[in-house]
Structure formats: C-alpha cells, structure tokens
Length: 281
Image 1 (cartoon, rainbow, N blue to C red):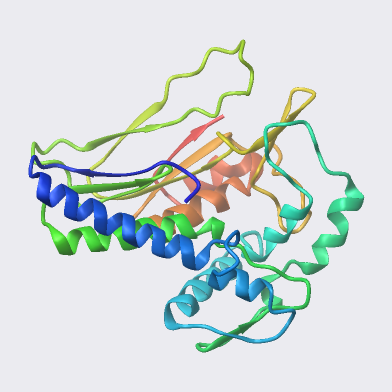
Image 2 (cartoon, rainbow, N blue to C red):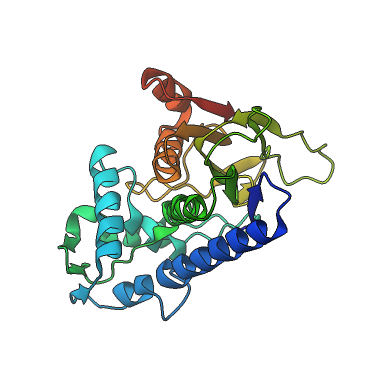
C-alpha cells in the first residue's frame, strides 16, 4: 500500500488481536499483489501490457473497474484511472523537476476511460493506454479488510492504511476513535511542523486526498501529485489536504479526490453536496 498500515482493536485479548491482524495483513497483501501496477505479475500489469488486446478478468476485477467507470462518468471525466500514464512525465519525489509541455502533451491521447472496453469477463484498453488503481485500491483494501475483521470479532476495530480509515464501531467506553490528519507542511527544514488535525470517528470511513508526501516544489510553488487528466497538470489553488467522511472508504476516497480536482472551489463543492469534510489550506 506504499504507506504504514495498522489495525486497532479495542481489546486486551492477544489471540483475537493476532488473528484479526494476520487476517487483515493477508487481505492487504492479496490486493497489493493483484492490483499494484508496479508488480509484473499483477492483474493490473497484465492489463497494461496487453497492447490493445482483451484480457480475461474475474468478477472482483470487473466490479472494481465498473466502479472506476462510474466515478469517471459521475465526475465528467475528472476522475480517471487511465491517467496513470502521466507517471511517465511526472515524478513526485519532492524535487523541483517540473516536466515540460512536450513531455506531457503526447500522453493525453492515451487518457480516457470512455475508450476502455469493459465486459463482465474481459477488459481491453486502447493501444498505449494504462490503468492505475492507486486512486481507489487502498480504500478498497480498507473496506474489505474491515469486513473480514467484523466476521472474526464483534469487538470494535479500526483499519488505517496510510490515512484511509474505516471503523466498525466506537471503542467500548462509548467515546469515538481519535484520528490525526497529517498537516501537509512544506518540505522546508526551517519551517516548524504544524500539529495534526484531530477528528473523531465512531463508525464508517474517512479518506484523505492531498500532497503531504507526494509533491514537487519549485520557486516556492507546490505541485500536487493529483493531476487533472484533461490537461495533464497538477491541480492549482486547491486545499493542500481534504478529508471526507462516507459510509465506506472507497466512496470517501473518490469524493475527496474529486473535491481536490475542483481546485479553489473544492470546499464549496463539498458544502454544496452537504458532505462531512475537513480542508487544510
């Protein structure tokens, strides 16, 4: 998941904690192995290497791709998992290496989920196209992991994969879980690190979209890793971080990213939709 992952269990029973922790870790690795674009043996890698030919998929992959298609349609193309091809131009390593227009423009013709042919049994991309489950994969893993934990125990559990979070119930003392949201401070050793924003969650999910760890910095301007698939460039004027609440994590993740894609209108977008959220500017 390219981030710290943890399971919090409101119990002193070490056996239950061990069983739940191992089951969640197994599920996280299963999803990582299946959908990471960086593993040559993954389903994602096989689809990306298909060179325009149909690839057979199972029911789980179809449902995940169908969710991505719905996100694409609901966002009018702003949320697009085929935009992962832009990684060929952008490297978010904290440096000041902003790609030139001639590196980005040629990639735009390979972006567009409307050019993906999807059935319940197969998927075919246009030649040169790629998909990247990074925008929904971690959140999907959180949701499935919580389902597994709830089958193993009725004890309150919170799953946290790199800040994407879901909780089954509040701790037994009745008080909500306290979750810290990292402040995406600038990469400057002379800047004092801001304290995290602490929010409460009893059940349901939280997901955060922002540039706390993946960004570029040039001439005092910060370039987020969240890219506009229509232009190929970083979103301008958006909050540095957006956290959203939803019944499950994959929904929260989609909404948080979609809000960030609104740029300076991000917070107004969330207010108009009456969605619980926290923005850090």
